[in-house]
Image (cartoon, rainbow, N blue to C red):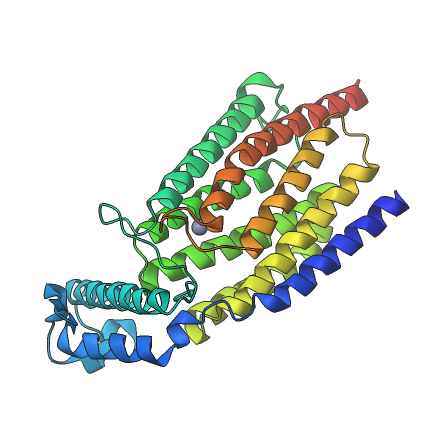
Length: 345
Ligand SMILES: [Zn+2]
């Protein structure tokens, strides 16, 4: 076990040191030529020869700042968002073309690689894969629900014997919520969808870490659960508020997410190392698979043919992992329920 733990600490630090190199992730939108192009386009509605209809909105565009209830009606905002997204897209394509002619590799813009649009979808591959992930979570959660309430014996008060029921219900909801916004965000990248996607992903990560600690340390006492939850919920909420209201800092967010993700994997790995849970091999496969998948998210490469990038592949790997994960959760339900029933007898 000790050797195992050492190995994990080594992986932990390797991942941390790699992080330092991804910090300059969004170089494209810092490029002054790109910024000029977007600024010009938002004023004139044109990039070079190409002009966009959406960019003709009301002259009073200063009302974009200020609280939401003081802003323009929603449809005008949509027009503005359309304009911004068209400007960004075409400025990016122009800049990337120029850069490619000079022999430079692609840059990231607003946290994302330059993608080609397909039928109006910005990243069609990621959209499809997010939808599949959502479906997998729904399937997993539904079979978990059926197992709990229809297949296994219930307590006299009609509640399941399993003591982590509520926690996994919330987990299922947060996962589906996060994949839903991921699909929306990958189809249309505007400020609102970006904030919704990032916020729900951070909420899911923070909550999963909480769940990892509560389950692997078998925290069953309410007061102890609150002690674990309070700092994690406080930190996650603060981070979400920071991203939404102060600064959408991709580098910092990446750090926070990787630290929460790696810590969670370490907690599960250590539990898998010591527990005598009959399905610990499922836990191991999710930990190892999740770790490898995370490497894709860290060493991300630009999209092949403007369509498939590391992020899309990462969304593909989470589909089988989700299946194994819910299968582990269901095994845990059966295992805990049967050991509780044995105790009662
Ligand atoms: Zn995504």
